[in-house]
Figure: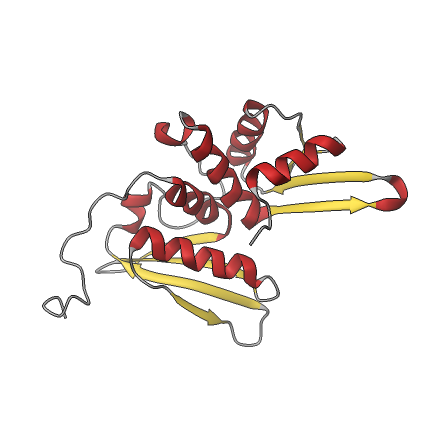
Length: 194
């Protein structure tokens, strides 16, 4: 299989670009990295009714890994999975195997130092774990990122403020509520723009 080019013989470091930054955000939100005896697997789970997210995530995986992922509908469920198997996925993405519930994720400096990469990283997180709410009777606007990992919430709050937005942090979410800022942040990260 290696001779045919179906299996890579080397696994180089990923190119540091916007696609990688967004994929890291997506994996931290809706992804999971499994350890197997000879390789790792990356699985991103999305809602089958939100195929824009599923298709975009599959496209990001293809762009970063240069390998087409498997996209499947989960039986008796409304879930879709995007899966890829390869060596050293965890090490190359800088995200540990297993649960990230209490992970104190340190954002790579190449993302922190670049506004465009920070925006793409936030897009990945918001596409995976974000919501946009508008309630016409009260003219309430909310764009929020929800997660149980307190370290990740703090990171998102810091990045959102660093981009010039006013945010409020609650137990399990970071929320932007000012009408103009909600629209501006939505447009900046291209939230749900497929």
